[in-house]
Length: 279
Image (tube, rainbow, N blue to C red):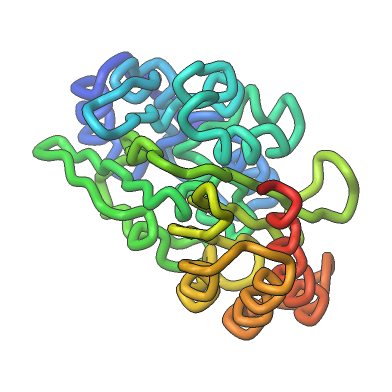
């Protein structure tokens, strides 16, 4: 048995880290459990973040929503602010794993795992979310797009934790859409996913667009060329096909047991075509 610390405040957390500097911090533990059983992790101690109130809750802070990193996916789904402000994130949370995983897994865990297939990542990329990193001495915010540096890799410094996620309060988006394709209808890891935000005016012209794909590269992929293709033009199926072609050129899918690169490239473009049904 290895020692497990359960701090109830950030000050208790920093004291625990000082006492066990090689300890691994975790919240839901869904990813940690899998890796420990596979023999991929053997930390000398564990520190559980679940009981630290400063890492929980959802609140408005001016023009931002602050989402506590230790919030479970189920807790976020139940939050009225999340439901009304960021339905694109809600759509991703609803299809994230099983009910058990949603009950245990946390937003911070999903981001720190940094999987290209992580379901919360594309919506938060499209929303231009930021992460707040905490150390005993300071807090520091940085764009999520800079925090995720590769598959399973982040810019989290040693001794720091992810404290919260900050999302600009969406304004003017007329479409917030998330869709993923997996190998089965439920409980599936995504083969390709797309988060899309569009602002379309009364004449049907796209004024703003933000697009982010999961599982088609080493990290979540964005495609400014596809976004620019849509802006200032009447949203239509032919226009979406034009943007889809640009996205298919931009992505760099991997090949694994779930799909080959060509299939992922095709689906990455086809998911864009769904937007024609939403406006």
